[in-house]
Image (cartoon, rainbow, N blue to C red):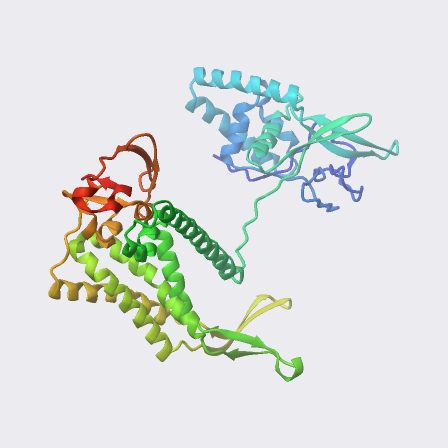
Length: 494
Protein backbone atom coordinates (compact mmCIF):
# COMPACT_ATOMS: atom_id res chain seq x y z
CA UNK A 1 0.00 0.00 0.00
CA UNK A 2 1.59 3.34 -1.03
CA UNK A 3 2.18 5.71 1.86
CA UNK A 4 0.65 9.16 2.19
CA UNK A 5 2.14 11.42 4.84
CA UNK A 6 1.90 15.03 3.68
CA UNK A 7 -0.70 16.51 1.36
CA UNK A 8 -1.31 20.04 0.10
CA UNK A 9 -4.95 20.05 -1.06
CA UNK A 10 -6.58 23.00 -2.84
CA UNK A 11 -10.40 23.25 -2.83
CA UNK A 12 -12.53 23.75 -5.91
CA UNK A 13 -12.62 27.33 -7.17
CA UNK A 14 -9.33 28.45 -5.72
CA UNK A 15 -7.19 27.63 -8.76
CA UNK A 16 -6.63 30.89 -10.59
CA UNK A 17 -6.34 33.82 -8.17
CA UNK A 18 -3.68 34.69 -5.67
CA UNK A 19 -4.24 33.31 -2.18
CA UNK A 20 -3.35 35.41 0.87
CA UNK A 21 -4.01 32.92 3.65
CA UNK A 22 -7.06 31.79 5.56
CA UNK A 23 -6.46 33.40 8.96
CA UNK A 24 -9.14 36.02 9.50
CA UNK A 25 -7.51 37.02 12.80
CA UNK A 26 -4.30 38.26 11.15
CA UNK A 27 -3.29 40.96 8.71
CA UNK A 28 -3.08 40.22 4.99
CA UNK A 29 0.56 39.68 4.02
CA UNK A 30 2.38 37.72 1.31
CA UNK A 31 0.35 35.45 -0.96
CA UNK A 32 0.71 32.29 -3.01
CA UNK A 33 -0.11 31.50 -6.61
CA UNK A 34 -0.74 27.76 -6.34
CA UNK A 35 -0.58 26.72 -2.68
CA UNK A 36 -3.23 27.53 -0.11
CA UNK A 37 -2.26 29.81 2.77
CA UNK A 38 -2.49 28.53 6.31
CA UNK A 39 -5.92 28.55 7.92
CA UNK A 40 -6.68 30.16 11.26
CA UNK A 41 -4.56 28.89 14.14
CA UNK A 42 -5.63 28.73 17.77
CA UNK A 43 -2.17 29.67 19.04
CA UNK A 44 -2.41 33.09 17.39
CA UNK A 45 0.41 32.46 14.92
CA UNK A 46 0.33 34.93 12.04
CA UNK A 47 3.18 33.59 9.91
CA UNK A 48 3.12 35.33 6.55
CA UNK A 49 4.62 32.56 4.43
CA UNK A 50 2.93 29.49 5.93
CA UNK A 51 1.05 27.18 3.62
CA UNK A 52 -1.69 24.76 4.60
CA UNK A 53 -0.44 21.19 5.15
CA UNK A 54 -2.58 18.11 5.71
CA UNK A 55 -0.84 15.41 7.74
CA UNK A 56 -2.20 11.92 7.25
CA UNK A 57 -1.34 8.25 7.43
CA UNK A 58 -2.49 5.03 5.80
CA UNK A 59 -5.27 4.33 8.30
CA UNK A 60 -6.74 7.84 8.09
CA UNK A 61 -6.46 7.85 4.31
CA UNK A 62 -8.30 4.51 4.05
CA UNK A 63 -11.00 5.73 6.45
CA UNK A 64 -11.50 8.95 4.48
CA UNK A 65 -11.74 6.99 1.23
CA UNK A 66 -14.28 4.63 2.82
CA UNK A 67 -16.40 7.60 3.94
CA UNK A 68 -16.28 9.34 0.57
CA UNK A 69 -19.29 9.05 -1.72
CA UNK A 70 -18.56 6.22 -4.23
CA UNK A 71 -18.98 8.36 -7.35
CA UNK A 72 -16.35 10.80 -5.98
CA UNK A 73 -13.57 8.25 -5.39
CA UNK A 74 -11.98 8.23 -8.83
CA UNK A 75 -8.26 9.01 -9.13
CA UNK A 76 -9.27 12.40 -10.56
CA UNK A 77 -9.80 13.65 -7.01
CA UNK A 78 -6.01 13.81 -6.77
CA UNK A 79 -6.06 16.84 -9.07
CA UNK A 80 -6.61 18.84 -5.89
CA UNK A 81 -3.30 17.60 -4.48
CA UNK A 82 -0.55 20.10 -5.36
CA UNK A 83 2.61 18.48 -4.02
CA UNK A 84 2.55 14.90 -5.37
CA UNK A 85 -0.65 14.03 -7.26
CA UNK A 86 1.00 10.91 -8.72
CA UNK A 87 1.47 9.39 -5.24
CA UNK A 88 -2.14 10.24 -4.46
CA UNK A 89 -3.34 8.43 -7.59
CA UNK A 90 -1.23 5.38 -6.77
CA UNK A 91 -2.77 5.25 -3.31
CA UNK A 92 -6.35 5.60 -4.60
CA UNK A 93 -5.76 2.93 -7.24
CA UNK A 94 -4.46 0.50 -4.60
CA UNK A 95 -6.86 1.44 -1.79
CA UNK A 96 -10.13 0.97 -3.68
CA UNK A 97 -9.51 -2.75 -4.43
CA UNK A 98 -8.22 -3.19 -0.87
CA UNK A 99 -11.47 -1.85 0.62
CA UNK A 100 -13.59 -3.91 -1.75
CA UNK A 101 -11.66 -7.08 -0.98
CA UNK A 102 -11.66 -6.79 2.82
CA UNK A 103 -15.14 -5.39 3.53
CA UNK A 104 -18.22 -7.33 2.55
CA UNK A 105 -20.84 -5.57 0.39
CA UNK A 106 -23.36 -5.72 3.24
CA UNK A 107 -21.00 -4.07 5.72
CA UNK A 108 -19.90 -1.57 3.10
CA UNK A 109 -23.48 -0.56 2.39
CA UNK A 110 -24.28 -0.28 6.11
CA UNK A 111 -21.22 1.91 6.62
CA UNK A 112 -22.22 4.21 3.78
CA UNK A 113 -25.71 4.61 5.22
CA UNK A 114 -24.24 5.67 8.57
CA UNK A 115 -21.75 7.99 6.87
CA UNK A 116 -24.54 9.64 4.88
CA UNK A 117 -26.46 10.31 8.10
CA UNK A 118 -23.39 11.74 9.81
CA UNK A 119 -22.59 13.88 6.79
CA UNK A 120 -26.11 15.28 6.69
CA UNK A 121 -26.09 16.02 10.41
CA UNK A 122 -22.70 17.77 10.26
CA UNK A 123 -23.74 19.86 7.29
CA UNK A 124 -27.08 20.80 8.88
CA UNK A 125 -26.02 21.55 12.45
CA UNK A 126 -22.41 22.74 12.09
CA UNK A 127 -21.69 23.42 8.42
CA UNK A 128 -17.88 23.61 8.66
CA UNK A 129 -16.14 25.73 6.05
CA UNK A 130 -12.74 26.57 4.66
CA UNK A 131 -11.79 30.22 4.25
CA UNK A 132 -9.19 32.02 2.12
CA UNK A 133 -8.42 35.56 1.02
CA UNK A 134 -8.48 35.53 -2.81
CA UNK A 135 -7.07 38.32 -4.95
CA UNK A 136 -7.98 38.78 -8.63
CA UNK A 137 -5.30 40.94 -10.30
CA UNK A 138 -7.38 41.64 -13.43
CA UNK A 139 -10.18 43.10 -11.34
CA UNK A 140 -7.94 44.41 -8.53
CA UNK A 141 -10.42 42.80 -6.18
CA UNK A 142 -9.75 41.07 -2.85
CA UNK A 143 -12.55 38.86 -1.53
CA UNK A 144 -13.14 36.54 1.40
CA UNK A 145 -13.93 33.13 -0.06
CA UNK A 146 -15.42 30.46 2.15
CA UNK A 147 -16.72 27.15 0.89
CA UNK A 148 -18.55 24.34 2.63
CA UNK A 149 -16.29 21.49 3.61
CA UNK A 150 -18.90 18.92 2.53
CA UNK A 151 -20.11 20.64 -0.64
CA UNK A 152 -20.61 17.47 -2.70
CA UNK A 153 -17.60 18.06 -4.99
CA UNK A 154 -14.76 15.63 -5.58
CA UNK A 155 -12.90 17.46 -2.81
CA UNK A 156 -14.92 15.35 -0.34
CA UNK A 157 -12.06 12.91 0.22
CA UNK A 158 -9.89 15.70 1.64
CA UNK A 159 -12.87 17.03 3.58
CA UNK A 160 -13.10 13.77 5.48
CA UNK A 161 -9.38 13.98 6.24
CA UNK A 162 -10.02 17.40 7.79
CA UNK A 163 -12.90 16.01 9.83
CA UNK A 164 -10.80 13.05 11.00
CA UNK A 165 -8.17 15.54 12.18
CA UNK A 166 -10.93 17.34 14.07
CA UNK A 167 -12.00 14.11 15.77
CA UNK A 168 -8.37 13.40 16.69
CA UNK A 169 -8.01 16.92 18.16
CA UNK A 170 -5.46 17.96 15.57
CA UNK A 171 -7.82 20.69 14.36
CA UNK A 172 -10.71 22.68 15.77
CA UNK A 173 -13.88 24.15 14.33
CA UNK A 174 -14.46 27.79 15.33
CA UNK A 175 -17.59 29.84 14.67
CA UNK A 176 -17.41 33.57 13.90
CA UNK A 177 -20.58 35.63 14.09
CA UNK A 178 -20.62 39.01 12.37
CA UNK A 179 -23.16 41.71 11.64
CA UNK A 180 -23.73 40.57 8.05
CA UNK A 181 -22.70 36.93 7.97
CA UNK A 182 -21.47 33.98 10.00
CA UNK A 183 -18.65 31.52 9.34
CA UNK A 184 -17.77 28.19 10.95
CA UNK A 185 -14.14 27.62 10.02
CA UNK A 186 -11.83 24.64 10.22
CA UNK A 187 -8.53 25.63 11.78
CA UNK A 188 -5.03 24.71 10.76
CA UNK A 189 -3.18 21.71 12.11
CA UNK A 190 -2.17 21.69 15.77
CA UNK A 191 0.41 18.95 16.13
CA UNK A 192 1.17 17.63 19.59
CA UNK A 193 4.48 18.66 21.10
CA UNK A 194 6.65 16.50 23.28
CA UNK A 195 8.84 18.32 25.75
CA UNK A 196 10.97 16.96 28.52
CA UNK A 197 10.16 18.13 32.04
CA UNK A 198 12.62 20.54 33.53
CA UNK A 199 14.90 18.42 35.76
CA UNK A 200 15.24 21.34 38.17
CA UNK A 201 11.48 21.34 38.77
CA UNK A 202 11.18 17.62 39.55
CA UNK A 203 12.55 17.77 43.13
CA UNK A 204 10.37 20.78 43.94
CA UNK A 205 7.24 19.10 42.59
CA UNK A 206 7.99 15.81 44.35
CA UNK A 207 8.62 17.64 47.63
CA UNK A 208 5.33 19.52 47.25
CA UNK A 209 3.30 16.34 46.73
CA UNK A 210 5.05 14.53 49.58
CA UNK A 211 4.45 17.45 51.92
CA UNK A 212 0.78 17.56 50.91
CA UNK A 213 0.43 13.83 51.60
CA UNK A 214 2.07 14.19 55.01
CA UNK A 215 -0.15 17.16 55.85
CA UNK A 216 -3.20 15.10 54.92
CA UNK A 217 -1.94 12.33 57.19
CA UNK A 218 -1.48 14.78 60.06
CA UNK A 219 -4.94 16.28 59.62
CA UNK A 220 -6.55 12.83 59.64
CA UNK A 221 -4.71 11.88 62.83
CA UNK A 222 -5.79 15.15 64.43
CA UNK A 223 -9.39 14.33 63.54
CA UNK A 224 -9.06 10.82 64.99
CA UNK A 225 -7.50 12.27 68.14
CA UNK A 226 -10.45 14.63 68.44
CA UNK A 227 -12.91 11.73 68.21
CA UNK A 228 -10.90 9.79 70.80
CA UNK A 229 -10.93 12.72 73.22
CA UNK A 230 -14.66 13.17 72.70
CA UNK A 231 -15.22 9.47 73.40
CA UNK A 232 -13.13 9.69 76.58
CA UNK A 233 -15.19 12.67 77.76
CA UNK A 234 -18.55 11.04 76.98
CA UNK A 235 -17.60 7.79 78.72
CA UNK A 236 -16.20 9.66 81.75
CA UNK A 237 -12.68 8.35 81.31
CA UNK A 238 -13.63 4.68 81.62
CA UNK A 239 -11.10 3.54 79.03
CA UNK A 240 -7.85 1.61 78.86
CA UNK A 241 -5.22 4.34 79.12
CA UNK A 242 -2.34 2.16 77.95
CA UNK A 243 -4.02 1.77 74.57
CA UNK A 244 -3.64 5.50 73.94
CA UNK A 245 0.14 5.03 73.82
CA UNK A 246 -0.42 2.95 70.69
CA UNK A 247 -2.20 5.81 68.93
CA UNK A 248 0.21 6.23 65.99
CA UNK A 249 0.72 2.51 65.52
CA UNK A 250 -2.96 1.51 65.46
CA UNK A 251 -4.65 4.65 64.13
CA UNK A 252 -2.01 4.98 61.43
CA UNK A 253 -2.62 1.53 59.99
CA UNK A 254 -6.41 1.70 60.34
CA UNK A 255 -7.16 5.30 59.36
CA UNK A 256 -4.19 6.22 57.17
CA UNK A 257 -2.92 3.06 55.53
CA UNK A 258 0.46 1.46 55.12
CA UNK A 259 1.55 3.30 51.93
CA UNK A 260 1.33 6.74 53.54
CA UNK A 261 2.99 5.43 56.69
CA UNK A 262 5.88 4.14 54.60
CA UNK A 263 6.04 7.51 52.83
CA UNK A 264 6.26 9.33 56.15
CA UNK A 265 8.97 7.03 57.45
CA UNK A 266 11.01 7.23 54.25
CA UNK A 267 10.68 11.02 54.24
CA UNK A 268 12.17 11.12 57.74
CA UNK A 269 15.03 8.92 56.56
CA UNK A 270 15.62 11.32 53.65
CA UNK A 271 15.93 14.20 56.11
CA UNK A 272 18.41 12.23 58.20
CA UNK A 273 20.42 11.48 55.05
CA UNK A 274 20.67 15.11 53.94
CA UNK A 275 22.93 17.93 55.06
CA UNK A 276 21.68 21.49 55.17
CA UNK A 277 23.62 24.10 53.20
CA UNK A 278 22.70 27.77 53.52
CA UNK A 279 23.32 30.24 50.69
CA UNK A 280 24.93 33.36 52.16
CA UNK A 281 26.24 36.66 50.78
CA UNK A 282 29.42 37.58 52.62
CA UNK A 283 31.58 40.68 52.13
CA UNK A 284 28.58 43.01 52.03
CA UNK A 285 26.89 41.04 49.31
CA UNK A 286 29.82 41.07 46.89
CA UNK A 287 29.72 37.29 46.43
CA UNK A 288 27.58 34.30 47.30
CA UNK A 289 28.61 31.02 48.85
CA UNK A 290 27.21 27.92 50.52
CA UNK A 291 27.87 27.57 54.24
CA UNK A 292 27.61 24.36 56.23
CA UNK A 293 25.30 24.55 59.26
CA UNK A 294 25.19 22.20 62.20
CA UNK A 295 22.08 20.01 62.23
CA UNK A 296 19.47 21.07 64.73
CA UNK A 297 19.31 18.54 67.57
CA UNK A 298 15.53 18.79 67.90
CA UNK A 299 15.00 18.18 64.18
CA UNK A 300 17.31 15.18 64.35
CA UNK A 301 15.43 13.70 67.31
CA UNK A 302 12.05 14.26 65.68
CA UNK A 303 13.21 12.77 62.37
CA UNK A 304 14.61 9.74 64.20
CA UNK A 305 11.26 9.28 65.89
CA UNK A 306 9.38 9.69 62.61
CA UNK A 307 11.38 6.77 61.22
CA UNK A 308 9.27 4.68 63.57
CA UNK A 309 6.38 4.85 61.08
CA UNK A 310 8.36 2.51 58.86
CA UNK A 311 8.97 0.19 61.81
CA UNK A 312 5.22 0.19 62.54
CA UNK A 313 4.51 -1.03 59.04
CA UNK A 314 7.13 -3.77 59.28
CA UNK A 315 5.70 -4.94 62.60
CA UNK A 316 2.18 -5.00 61.19
CA UNK A 317 3.05 -6.73 57.92
CA UNK A 318 5.09 -9.49 59.55
CA UNK A 319 2.68 -10.01 62.46
CA UNK A 320 1.21 -12.86 60.42
CA UNK A 321 4.51 -14.68 61.09
CA UNK A 322 5.58 -13.31 64.47
CA UNK A 323 2.10 -13.88 66.00
CA UNK A 324 2.20 -14.00 69.83
CA UNK A 325 5.70 -12.47 69.91
CA UNK A 326 4.50 -9.29 68.18
CA UNK A 327 3.33 -7.71 71.45
CA UNK A 328 6.74 -7.95 73.07
CA UNK A 329 9.15 -7.25 70.23
CA UNK A 330 7.30 -4.41 68.47
CA UNK A 331 8.01 -1.76 71.09
CA UNK A 332 11.60 -2.96 71.48
CA UNK A 333 12.20 -2.67 67.73
CA UNK A 334 10.74 0.84 67.69
CA UNK A 335 12.98 2.01 70.55
CA UNK A 336 16.05 0.37 69.01
CA UNK A 337 15.37 2.05 65.67
CA UNK A 338 14.83 5.43 67.31
CA UNK A 339 17.98 5.26 69.42
CA UNK A 340 20.07 3.82 66.60
CA UNK A 341 19.06 6.52 64.10
CA UNK A 342 19.58 9.32 66.64
CA UNK A 343 22.99 8.09 67.81
CA UNK A 344 24.17 7.51 64.23
CA UNK A 345 23.02 10.98 63.13
CA UNK A 346 24.70 12.73 66.09
CA UNK A 347 27.97 10.82 66.03
CA UNK A 348 28.45 10.58 62.25
CA UNK A 349 26.57 13.52 60.69
CA UNK A 350 26.04 13.68 56.95
CA UNK A 351 28.53 15.83 55.02
CA UNK A 352 28.20 17.23 51.55
CA UNK A 353 30.75 16.64 48.83
CA UNK A 354 31.65 18.51 45.68
CA UNK A 355 33.16 17.19 42.46
CA UNK A 356 34.55 19.54 39.82
CA UNK A 357 34.64 18.10 36.31
CA UNK A 358 33.87 20.59 33.55
CA UNK A 359 32.43 18.95 30.43
CA UNK A 360 30.92 20.90 27.56
CA UNK A 361 28.68 19.74 24.74
CA UNK A 362 28.01 21.65 21.54
CA UNK A 363 24.27 21.59 20.95
CA UNK A 364 24.20 24.03 18.02
CA UNK A 365 27.43 25.07 16.32
CA UNK A 366 28.21 28.78 16.87
CA UNK A 367 24.95 29.21 18.76
CA UNK A 368 24.52 27.05 21.88
CA UNK A 369 27.04 25.45 24.22
CA UNK A 370 26.04 23.45 27.30
CA UNK A 371 28.56 22.92 30.08
CA UNK A 372 28.46 20.95 33.33
CA UNK A 373 31.07 22.23 35.76
CA UNK A 374 30.54 19.70 38.54
CA UNK A 375 28.21 18.28 41.15
CA UNK A 376 27.24 19.45 44.62
CA UNK A 377 25.68 16.60 46.62
CA UNK A 378 24.01 17.32 49.95
CA UNK A 379 22.46 13.88 50.38
CA UNK A 380 24.08 10.51 50.92
CA UNK A 381 22.46 7.48 49.34
CA UNK A 382 24.56 5.12 51.43
CA UNK A 383 23.18 6.72 54.61
CA UNK A 384 19.65 6.39 53.22
CA UNK A 385 20.13 2.67 52.55
CA UNK A 386 21.84 2.23 55.90
CA UNK A 387 18.88 3.70 57.79
CA UNK A 388 16.50 1.45 55.89
CA UNK A 389 18.60 -1.55 56.87
CA UNK A 390 18.72 -0.24 60.43
CA UNK A 391 14.91 -0.18 60.64
CA UNK A 392 14.66 -3.71 59.27
CA UNK A 393 17.58 -4.97 61.38
CA UNK A 394 16.09 -3.62 64.61
CA UNK A 395 12.91 -5.57 63.90
CA UNK A 396 14.87 -8.77 63.30
CA UNK A 397 17.08 -8.36 66.40
CA UNK A 398 14.15 -7.48 68.66
CA UNK A 399 12.15 -10.44 67.40
CA UNK A 400 14.92 -12.96 68.04
CA UNK A 401 15.52 -11.54 71.52
CA UNK A 402 11.82 -11.86 72.26
CA UNK A 403 11.75 -15.33 70.74
CA UNK A 404 14.63 -16.56 72.90
CA UNK A 405 13.92 -14.90 76.24
CA UNK A 406 10.12 -14.61 76.28
CA UNK A 407 7.24 -17.00 75.83
CA UNK A 408 4.93 -14.66 73.95
CA UNK A 409 1.44 -13.51 74.83
CA UNK A 410 -1.63 -15.07 73.25
CA UNK A 411 -4.11 -12.29 72.47
CA UNK A 412 -7.85 -12.41 71.93
CA UNK A 413 -8.97 -12.76 68.31
CA UNK A 414 -11.91 -11.06 66.63
CA UNK A 415 -12.65 -10.20 63.01
CA UNK A 416 -13.59 -6.69 64.14
CA UNK A 417 -10.17 -6.21 65.73
CA UNK A 418 -7.28 -5.10 63.52
CA UNK A 419 -4.08 -7.09 63.90
CA UNK A 420 -2.21 -4.06 65.29
CA UNK A 421 -4.94 -3.49 67.86
CA UNK A 422 -5.06 -7.18 68.68
CA UNK A 423 -1.38 -7.41 69.55
CA UNK A 424 -0.91 -3.98 71.16
CA UNK A 425 -4.10 -3.28 73.08
CA UNK A 426 -4.12 -4.13 76.79
CA UNK A 427 -6.65 -6.92 77.29
CA UNK A 428 -5.98 -8.30 80.78
CA UNK A 429 -8.75 -6.42 82.61
CA UNK A 430 -11.19 -6.34 79.71
CA UNK A 431 -11.94 -10.02 79.16
CA UNK A 432 -15.00 -11.39 80.97
CA UNK A 433 -16.32 -14.91 80.44
CA UNK A 434 -14.02 -15.34 77.44
CA UNK A 435 -15.27 -12.18 75.69
CA UNK A 436 -13.05 -9.17 75.05
CA UNK A 437 -14.78 -5.87 75.81
CA UNK A 438 -13.34 -2.96 73.82
CA UNK A 439 -13.74 0.50 75.31
CA UNK A 440 -15.19 3.24 73.10
CA UNK A 441 -11.99 5.31 72.78
CA UNK A 442 -9.93 2.27 71.77
CA UNK A 443 -12.71 1.35 69.35
CA UNK A 444 -12.16 4.64 67.53
CA UNK A 445 -8.47 3.80 67.16
CA UNK A 446 -9.50 0.40 65.84
CA UNK A 447 -11.75 1.99 63.23
CA UNK A 448 -15.08 1.28 64.93
CA UNK A 449 -17.23 4.40 65.13
CA UNK A 450 -20.09 3.53 67.47
CA UNK A 451 -23.41 5.33 67.98
CA UNK A 452 -25.84 3.96 70.63
CA UNK A 453 -29.51 3.62 69.72
CA UNK A 454 -32.56 2.37 71.57
CA UNK A 455 -32.24 -0.36 74.13
CA UNK A 456 -29.02 -2.34 74.18
CA UNK A 457 -28.25 -1.88 70.51
CA UNK A 458 -25.52 0.16 68.85
CA UNK A 459 -24.77 1.10 65.26
CA UNK A 460 -21.10 0.55 64.38
CA UNK A 461 -19.31 1.74 61.25
CA UNK A 462 -16.22 -0.37 60.58
CA UNK A 463 -13.77 1.90 58.74
CA UNK A 464 -11.60 -1.08 57.77
CA UNK A 465 -14.33 -2.74 55.69
CA UNK A 466 -16.77 0.19 55.30
CA UNK A 467 -19.61 -1.87 56.72
CA UNK A 468 -22.40 -0.64 58.98
CA UNK A 469 -23.51 -3.14 61.63
CA UNK A 470 -26.21 -3.14 64.28
CA UNK A 471 -24.95 -4.98 67.36
CA UNK A 472 -26.92 -6.26 70.34
CA UNK A 473 -25.07 -5.70 73.61
CA UNK A 474 -25.64 -7.85 76.68
CA UNK A 475 -24.68 -5.74 79.68
CA UNK A 476 -22.16 -7.24 82.08
CA UNK A 477 -23.28 -7.93 85.63
CA UNK A 478 -21.22 -5.20 87.33
CA UNK A 479 -22.11 -6.45 90.81
CA UNK A 480 -20.65 -9.87 90.07
CA UNK A 481 -17.68 -8.64 88.01
CA UNK A 482 -17.04 -5.50 90.10
CA UNK A 483 -16.16 -3.71 86.84
CA UNK A 484 -18.29 -0.64 86.22
CA UNK A 485 -16.13 0.39 83.27
CA UNK A 486 -17.33 -2.62 81.29
CA UNK A 487 -20.78 -1.04 80.99
CA UNK A 488 -19.36 1.37 78.38
CA UNK A 489 -17.63 -1.18 76.17
CA UNK A 490 -18.30 -3.13 72.99
CA UNK A 491 -18.19 -6.92 73.43
CA UNK A 492 -16.38 -8.43 70.47
CA UNK A 493 -17.33 -11.88 69.30
CA UNK A 494 -15.03 -14.31 67.58
